[in-house]
Length: 92
Image (cartoon, rainbow, N blue to C red; front, side, top):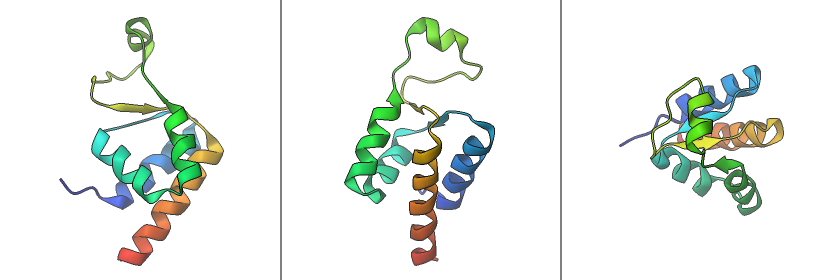
C-alpha cells in the first residue's frame, strides 16, 4: 500500500481549516509517527482516542475499529503538515 503524502497534507489542512478531527488508517498513522520528531510523535499519540460505543453513535462518520481517530489540535496539525510538506519536497 502506498500512501500519497499530498493526500495526507490535504486531509490535515482541511481538518485544520474546518476544526475537525482526523480519521486515518493505521498504515498512515504509522507513517506519520515515523516522520515526526519524537516529541511530536508522543503528542500525536496522546491525541489518538478510542471511542466508546456511545461516542461512536454520536460521530457523524462511521469509524471502523481499525481506524485511528486523532482529536483536533491546531498546533499539532500545523506541525504534522510542516513535517509532511518537508518530506514531500525531499522526495519530490
